[in-house]
Image (cartoon, rainbow, N blue to C red; front, top):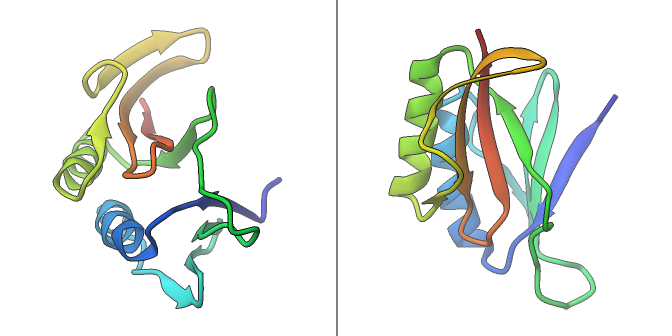
Length: 124
C-alpha cells in the first residue's frame, strides 16, 4: 500500500546518527543522504527523514506512530536499546508482550530526538 514514509527533523546529522543505529538493529543499511533529506531503502519500502522544505520547524504528529517490523523480541529489544543510546526516549509501557483483538505482539516504543513516536513490533 505504501511506497514510503517521510518524517521531519530539525537536525539531519543527529537524526542520521539515531536512525542509522536504530534501523541497523533491524538489518537496514545506513541512510543515503541527498541534501536536506536521507533515505533508508529496503525491499519492502522506503523510510525517509527530511528537513522541512518550507523552512518551518519540523514537528511530530500527535496521535501518530510509525511501526517497524522486528523478527523477534530480542531484535525489538536491541532496537529499543539502540534508540535510547542514540538520543531517543522511551515512551508507553516498557518493551514487552501485549495481547489484544489482533493477537499477541511484542512491542517496544520510543520517541526519536524530534519527538516522533516509533514502535518495533514482533507478531508472536
